[in-house]
Image 1 (tube, rainbow, N blue to C red):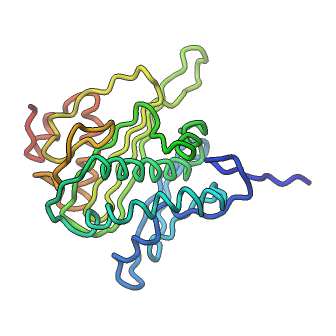
Image 2: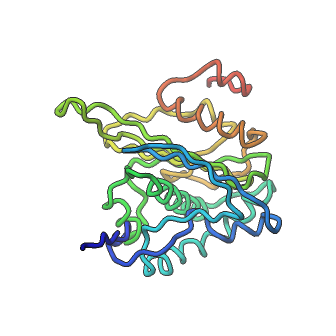
Length: 264
């Protein structure tokens, strides 16, 4: 009898251990025993949606080895806390340096990669995950924006979108072209977009500038946070996240006007 040994998605090592998708230090914001509802949308063969009720943020993935879990991932998490903590827990006006923006972008990329690997059929190739481990390299073509939400709870709201197109060389077969992972973590909103095709055209999203700012690719200056406009709660965050995603292709006037946003 043979046993299937799942290798680490970052380094290929084994055995794998449990890695929290959302770090346990976020539990400091939750009252003792507070239940946090996390919805997991899974895609791929046998796709399904599940909603699980967690005490705290006990959402784990068993695809990371102990060396990565306790090594570079732990260091990346520790280096991010001082920057993320005031953004998650409050809305005090502050300036984010280029260094701070890169650390936030790295943390957002790492978390989006974990969300992708929760799925039955992950999109991101292992080479991109390996480069994140070895060089802290955000995959080429990645776009990351940040914004704010007026509501602190629910502490975490997130979902993922996978887009596929028909493979002209293999009728009936599809291949992924995009992966989108918006996440609201307390007051902080992050929107991570991975295009799988190097020649995919990504349109400018200037008409949403009141509600978010791009932090990756690099900006040329420090960034004021929070932005002038922000969604009121988790539901409005999801609507705004969808508006951003669709705006990468075409400006949705009706939905934008719902938020009082005008095309520039």
